[in-house]
Image 1 (cartoon, helix red, strand yellow):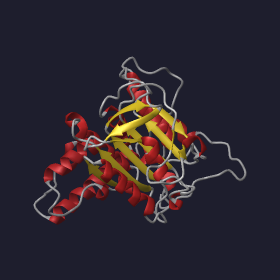
Image 2 (tube, rainbow, N blue to C red):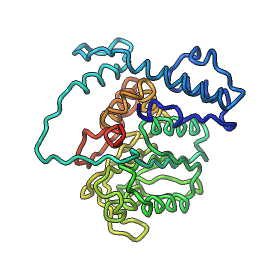
Image 3 (tube, one colour):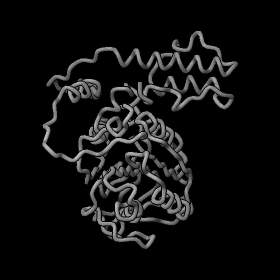
Image 4 (cartoon, one colour):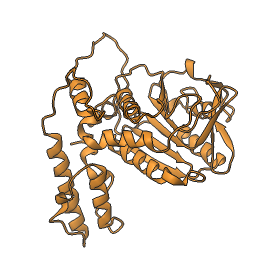
Length: 329
């Protein structure tokens, strides 16, 4: 059984974990409170037993047969049948090309860095970053969250990623949540100290040229920020003094903006959708390609009448899933 179904990635059997944390987790993964009906929380042993109960419930749910996808139109309520889509996807045999490039798995799916500006975004920012962290952990990522990063702190964290050892990690994810806008054809985000930084400069900091440890590995960027101001062309030098970051020439990047160029972004909606996809059936949905996860999140936003996300892929294998990035799965 992989880490996605293993609640130890979120809950621990020690004094730092409260009883309420267990019930909050049940809500996050859509399990009934009856799962913990006979559990005691007044000792570490009791908490460990509660974790076992949750794990068994997740495993049991994962074994329930799921319906095959059909060509029927969506229900009148507009709810996405993600389970049926996943079932169909798993039954589809992708064409196998001799010598086709495939990203290599590692012990961990990857490192995920969440940079969340809370200042000036207080309403919904906490829930947004917490859902993002939970979703990424369910995908098998090692997650670090920085709240209210200044410009210097933001650049410092990207330099840490650049200089880190990537031998045991198959990919990187950087999720940025901030106010943003487009200026001179490039998307900028505002950090907690009011200073701006262009997304292109951040992309360049961990490009394959500047971060050899991430060469031939997916570099996934998810940007929750408004993009008012017009269309975007991403050509800019890395402010750390590295080689120019021209994304059209850079392989292995997957970039998803929570809104389209020229539009505002609704806080929390995108990550709420991603979290819902993963929590619905983490053991199975971790097998969905990253492109499908992003696409289904966009569908959920379309159902709610929210402006489309904007995803650019420079991946060499668009079928790669979080599960395929982990050698132990």
